[in-house]
Picture 1 (spheres, each protein chain N blue to C red):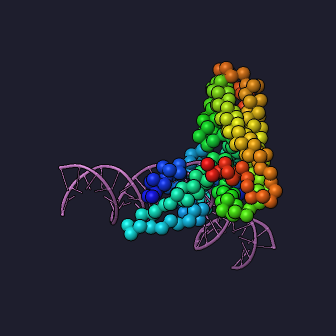
Picture 2: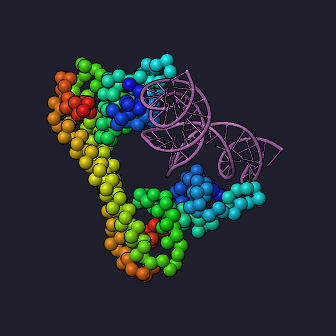
Picture 3: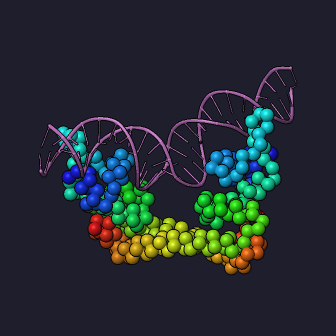
Amino acid sequence: MNIGQAASASGVSQRMIRHYEKIGLIPAPPRRDSGYRDYAEADIHRLRFIANARDLGFPVEEIRELLGLWNDKHRASAEVKVLAIARADELGRKADALQALRRSLLALAEQCHGDDRPDCPIIEKLQQ
Amino acid sequence: MNIGQAASASGVSQRMIRHYEKIGLIPAPPRRDSGYRDYAEADIHRLRFIANARDLGFPVEEIRELLGLWNDKHRASAEVKVLAIARADELGRKADALQALRRSLLALAEQCHGDDRPDCPIIEKLQQ
DNA sequence: TCTTGACTCTGACATCATGTCAAGGTCCAT
DNA sequence: ATGGACCTTGACATGATGTCAGAGTCAAGA
């Protein structure tokens, strides 16, 4: 299977397939005489796994760990669970930080009369 | 005032002061004969304004707009309020997206028994 | 006055995931 | 055999920020 087909089958762009190969997230596939990469079904699965993990917000280095666990038939589910919960905590922290910012901004906006007068507590806050 | 003093007075690193100058967020200050940049108080205020806006999650292009509004003595507070509310909405959307990811992960983790058995719904989900 | 250490200058390279473009080679159907 | 679709590599870009290197400058002390 050529890289274009692998890309549409997996949902990972050609660009990122080559990138993942370069950073060692997927093995380098065999090449045809022409130099074209030749992918097998297992590669597509691996790419889909990566795409799903990215969609779940895993950073690349954790995806690397997850791939290792995935390939290890004797892995313990405990290890996977630990990673998932750590990731969930991280996401929660980021979400909370964004919400806190949002609340600060809204509080300032509420105090701003929002008409054509020039004075505005938002600008005043930024000047501090 | 030299750039190092401007940096510690404003809380913006020397690196970023030069960067903001290059992208036109702050005016290029006059230079001494030596070529050293020479900052005035007004520059420090502007840098602090930028730092505060960044801390509130404003992207650079919106900071550029805010600086324009800040410098415009005849601005309407309505314009500032619109920007702030738009920014708050954007932050809220991002936070919600992160929370949704977090819930997906936690739901998977709850179904994972987390012991030394190898089967794990998190890994299964990633394979889909 | 000379020296020395702290400061400044510019420019380059790195991050991270991703896109785009270019120049050249390959494959396949007509 | 030809044309269009595909593949190859490499380079450059994003955005905000850090670091490093080599070279020049300043100020204080001997």
